[in-house]
Image 1 (cartoon, rainbow, N blue to C red):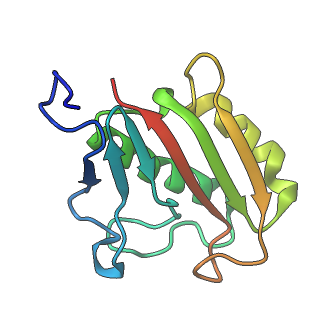
Image 2 (spheres, rainbow, N blue to C red):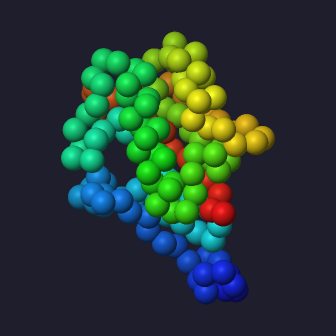
Length: 139
């Protein structure tokens, strides 16, 4: 089956990148687009060079992870308002209220997205306090 808009197969997987692609050297994609959906890798609180942003500051780290998520979604033809499902991994569940305020600021789609908010014992780097992955619609 082929999408009339793109000429692509509805099941063709297309890698989503950025410039620079901060995950290029680790063997994973920032995201993968399949049909009208984009699936992102977990977006961490890192800048374009891979350096951690906001060490010890949950809100600063969350904002950076959300900025990275926004970039990946935008590069796939989507956006934060198009997210239908997000999974948020945190190292301290007590940050749920802080993230709740950011959720209403960043995820403005209607109806509200589906979300899982999960505490984990650690993320890929010890200074990371949050990582966010999402599924978004491509319009």
